[in-house]
Length: 449
Image 1 (cartoon, rainbow, N blue to C red):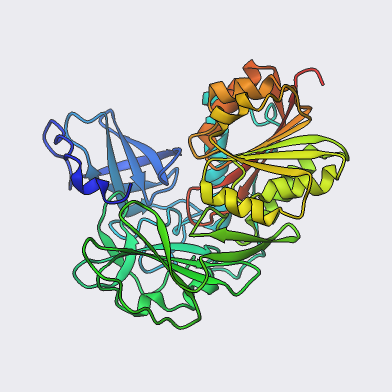
Image 2 (cartoon, rainbow, N blue to C red):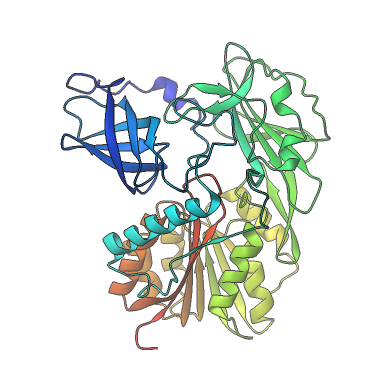
C-alpha cells in the first residue's frame, strides 16, 4: 500500500564500524545475479561492485557495509585495467552515485548479452543442476530489434516511472538503492512516445511520481500521477495529447482526464490495458514472446490450454486462435482490472474463459484434472513448488514457462524435474537493454517423451 513506508519503523543500524567511503584496489570476478554488479574480494571480504566488468582492475568505493557485514557494496570509481567490452557510457546521468535505472551503459551491446548469458548459466547450474545443453539452450541471449549505429542507445522503454524532487518539483530517476532523485532532462532508453511528452521540461509541484505510458501500435499516451500527501494535483499541460490519472493513498487509480486505458497492438489484436496495468514495456516484447511460446507449444486444433497469470489475455488470445472453436482456453489472473480488460479484449472468442483469483487458490478448485497445454508467466518470485506440483499432475503434453527472473526460473525448473518434466527448449531475449534484466521462455515436456 502506498504511503505505508512513512509509518514503518526504521531498521536498526548495522553493527560494526562503517566502511562507506573506503577505497580498495580490486580485481573484478564474475558477474552476479541481480543488481548489475560483479563479484570482487578484498582481504577475504566479498564486494558486489557496480560499474565494473569481469577481468578489470578497478578502484572500488564502498557504498554500503561495515566491518561486520557479510559483504560490501561498492562502485568502480576508477578503472585501472579496462575490459575489452567497456565503452564510454552514452548517458550523462549514468555512473557511480548517479541514476540507478541502467546497469550496463558502460558495456557494448554484445558484452551486455554475454553478461546476461553468464548469469543464466550460473543460475541454471546452481539452482536447477542443469547445463545449458541439458536445458535445451544454445547459450545465447538473443537481441531484439534492429541493429543501431555505434554509440546509439535503443529507445525501448514505453513506460517510465519518474520520481519528483520534493524541493524543486523537477523530475528525475532514483539513484541506485536510495530514494534520492537524480534530475534528468532526458532518459535515453525511453521510447519516443514517452520523450515527446516533454515531462522532463516542466515542474511537478505537489507530485511524488509521474509515470508516462506510450502505447505501441496506437497514439494513446497516459500519465499517472501520485500526489504528495495533502497536495492538489497541478494542471497538466504536455507537448502531446495525453490522458491523466492519479493514484490515491490506497494505491487505487482514478481517471482525471481522457481515457482510463491505452490501446496496445500485438499478436494481431488490439489490447486494452487500464490504469497503468501490466504490459511488456519493450515494444517488440509481446510479439517476440508470443511467437516463442507458440513455436514451442505447437498448439493443435481442438486442444485445451491453461494461461496462468494471464494479465490482459495476451497468450490466451494467441492460444485460442490456434486451438480453434473445438478447443478451449482458461485464463487465471488475480488483478481485478486486468481480468476486466482480458474479458473485454477476448469477448469475441467463445472458446476463452477468464477467471479472477490467485493461481494457487483457484486452480485446485476448477476441477480440471488434465489439459493439453499450459502457459505460465508468473511474477518475479516464480510459481513455487506447490503450484508446480499441481501443474505436473495435469499431464500436459507441453508447458511454456515465461520468466523475467533467471533464479526463479531455475528454481521452478528443478521442481518440474522432480515432477517428471524436463526442459526441451530454452530461449533468452534481451528485452531490457542497458539493464541486467532479460526474459526467458522455457518449453517443458514429460520425461521419456
